Image (cartoon, rainbow, N blue to C red; front, side, top):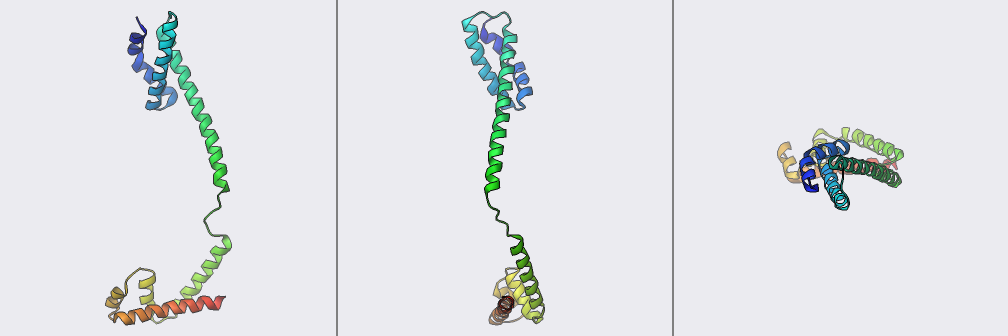
Length: 166
């Protein structure tokens, strides 16, 4: 039997065998193709007593080498990535900035609670719900210019509240 016949006869079993080591059908295919090249070179140089066994041994060695190489690459790249990630400063606010912002927000909420209901509602609709002045006016049954005044009153109150804090 020539090398190609041995390979073709064993190809399906070789793929299954390689997949057990690699855990991936595409990698198993790569291993089997590389095995064919090595097997072809070996059979052209000498006559083999057990060509099928030799072919399985090539697949096993290549699959194990690939598995070890991938494990080593993952180890190297993960440790480098972890070190690089640790060196990047966080975008998260500091604990102090977080506490200050919470305090400011509490002050704003307290100040908004003192506004007349219609002014507060107009401000909340505009700033928190993203509604347009026309929509606010329609919902509250007021003119667009009055809706704008109410929103501006809310904005001014927030500014004054924050200025008093400083």
